[in-house]
Amino acid sequence: MAFAIRDLSVLAYANGFTLWHHRLGGDTLADVAKDSYFADASDMMAVGDIVMVSGLTGCRMLCVAAADAGNVQCAPVG
Image (cartoon, rainbow, N blue to C red):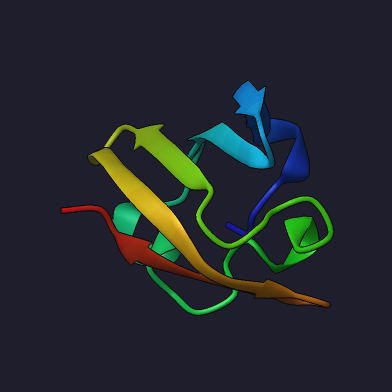
């Protein structure tokens, strides 16, 4: 499956930082690890944002390392 923006929500926002939650639905943690998985949300995400990802195959926290027009790169936290 592909990223669905309806499964992305804001948990907290302050001082230019956003904490996101993304429900995987049918995707796996390996899908989320691919470059530009969150590309459709590139206009909303910023470098330093944190994305909490959860689904049937587990959960993960990601840090947005790059975000610009049509591109979002994430790295695992810790």
